[in-house]
Amino acid sequence: MAKAEASFFTVIVTGQIEFADIPSCDNAYCKYAIVHGDDWTHLDGPEDGISQITRKTSSGPEQKLVWNFPVEVTYKATNAFGWPQLILSVYEIDAMGRDIIKGYGCVHLPIASGNFVRTVPLYKPLSASIAQQFINWATGRPAEFSNPKFPAMGEGREVTRVQSTGHASVALNVITKDMATFGYSEAKGAAVRVAI
Image 1 (cartoon, one colour):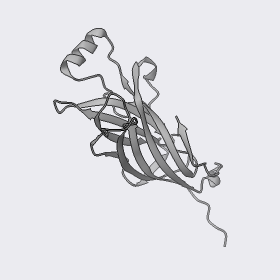
Image 2 (image 1 turned 60 degrees about the vertical axis):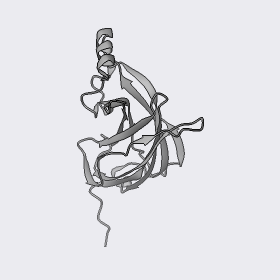
Image 3 (image 1 turned 180 degrees about the vertical axis):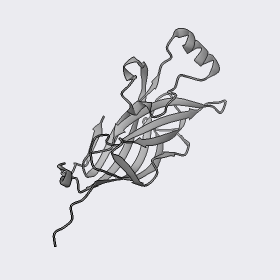
Image 4 (image 1 turned 90 degrees about the vertical axis):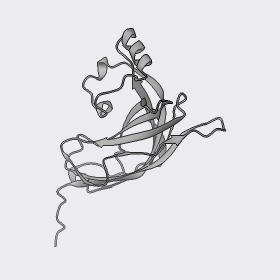
């Protein structure tokens, strides 16, 4: 009996948001969201989450904000267009108890099976004018995106001013199934640390 041809391919991703290195931040939590194109269907696992609040250690030259927050999600698709992206939003709790954005970042989930560690640059938006910068400073509310999924979008990015704030590290394990049926390579990815 001939084997039935698959009607979709599957991508399974597990891993964790390991840490962030933000020099001007002593405590923080991380929100994540995974976005994808219309040809993708979410099968299992949360597509968003929020970590615990962590503090930097008081000793050592490399003081990091360590979360080790788990990520586990499964998708099916018939087309690679709109490959899923992981969006990070890192917030600090200030002395007044307010949530202050310290950085946004975005990275595509790896496209091959294997173990990967991605270094995700973090940035925050800048105010449009000096007057707005002063108001934001006085109120303790810096500029932030109204849509937290904006870092994964292309439209409007060319007019957005941002400032680099640091980076985050994300470790991901990827399994793909039946991609060759749709003409995609199922080559194994190398276990590698990549800066994107």
